[in-house]
Image 1 (cartoon, rainbow, N blue to C red):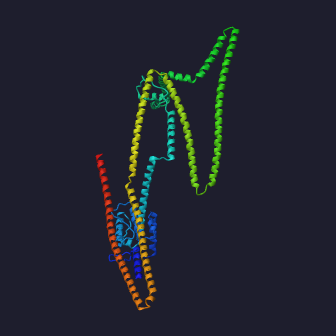
Image 2: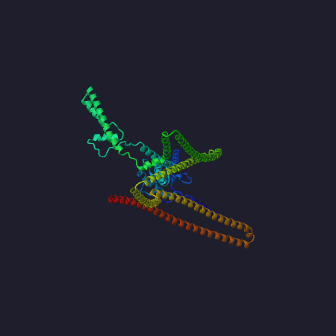
Image 3: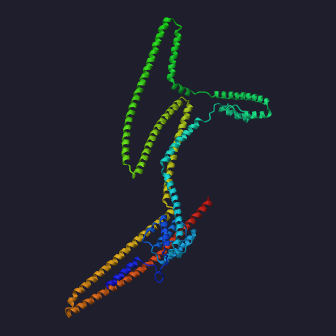
Length: 623
């Protein structure tokens, strides 16, 4: 009895792990497969293509060839983002009906995708890899091309998102050089621009356009125009020969006179403009006051010498001596003052020299320390960390160059600040000498400038607020995934769900196997204990008639208990079968609902696309 139960348990456990394909009548179906070398070669090539495309489930050894091929074809069709009105729901260990339906759907989809190769459902079902290989090759190419296209799109999108908030060191350096280059080009243009040397009086007018052009060229330093050449060509056509040359000489003389007359008018016009303001004179005198004072002293001394030459010799000699002593004392005082200034300057330069010398020693010691550290670093360099050390050196060099640029920029800013402060002081000094009207005009300009500056600050604050609102809206827009991302997330979740479901199914199978083996072990232990007890009591029971009757009664009770256990296990088996049928029916209903859900979602997406197109048309018409 126990052996029968063990066999039934083994069959049930084997049925849980291996369910052969059966038809509607429950008979197993044997598929005609050509087991030749060419078919195996094509199978390996198909699996290699699927692995190269990214379908790594083809590596699982527990899957059948049909599941690998049909799963790879379904994955390639989904990865190609081709819009097909077919529900390609693939699951492993499907029934024969589900496999046939899936192969028919795939064969129906391929012509819509413009596949150049023909394929029949029985070729997929029969694993005819010779005809399946070209189709898989074409699907893999299409899937790889779609991946590259999506990769370029995602890369461009990521770069655009990066450029919104970040900048590379090369771009920053380019912007820095760009500003200096623009300033240099502007200064060159300002230096070498055309300069007007003369100016035509406002009351002077010319009747013909050619004279006006010639005068304008003379204002900018051009002495010869085109009129003389044109006239000479006309005269040459009219007067050929030697007489023509003489006429050309006369025409040149007339042209020179005409140019001189125009130049006189221009020079007179410029002479009226050559006035220097009092503020400019004051600035010139202020810049060279020491030289003017020294020249005035020398002039007074010379004049005194000339006046002394007209007086008697004695008085002139005494006065000349006094003047000489006074001038020498003044020269001594000036030289002493210069010597003091030179001493102060020498002390300052000596202090600067000492500081520079100390700084040089520090830099040299720091350089020696860096050299020692670099030697240690070179000793630690290996093939494994060579790339990291090179990158570290490049970053250190970049840091040093940035520090140097920062110091240069700070020095430039200080010089520019000093120059601007001097210019402001000079302008204020010049403005202080102006009239009351100029002061009022300057005050009005300052008030207008302050008002404009306040207005600019308000506009900047408003712009900053708008920029923050725009950035917030942009982040909200970026947080909403696109359709391609949603489709990708859906595929990933489906794959994750499939993996979790397969793991859960396998775990349940292990639990069922463990429970069946545990029941088998318990029944075998019970059987062994019964046989042992019967064996031990057999000799004692057969010793007398009374013991024999009691022994037979005990054996009959044991048989009754075994029959009851058998009936109980049969009832349990029937309950399990009925529960299995109910779960299978529920599963089929859920599969139908899932298919209906996928179809409904697809119809909804199509309707959304149509709605967006109609809204765009309405907006275009309204606009």
